[in-house]
Length: 116
Image 1 (cartoon, rainbow, N blue to C red):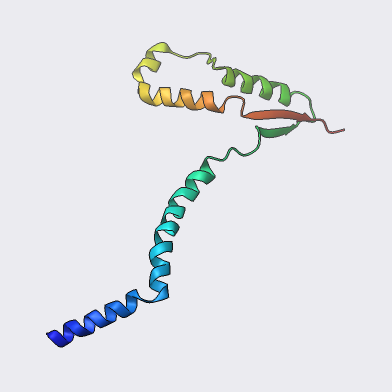
Image 2: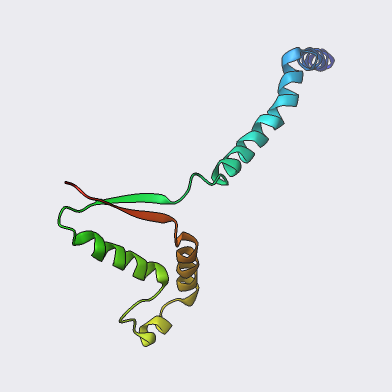
């Protein structure tokens, strides 16, 4: 058993004294923390401005209706909403969707493109 322990001790010391062991011991935690922090930094970046949506309308009728319906839904007015059914829904989920809508409001621009 003494010979076995002597061999294990020698192998362990040989591994610990190597340069690669020191490099991995120092860089290992740094690399692992980088893979945890980098995605958080990437998701926190606010890219550009509002999303631009171009509507090509040769008739001149579609854009106006589309613009009105988008502005109506963005302003929060919902016609024909039944208050009884709204109370029956899960209010927490509804509140989450309302907050999401508030965050997304004015996050896009509509642009009419005339052909001709």
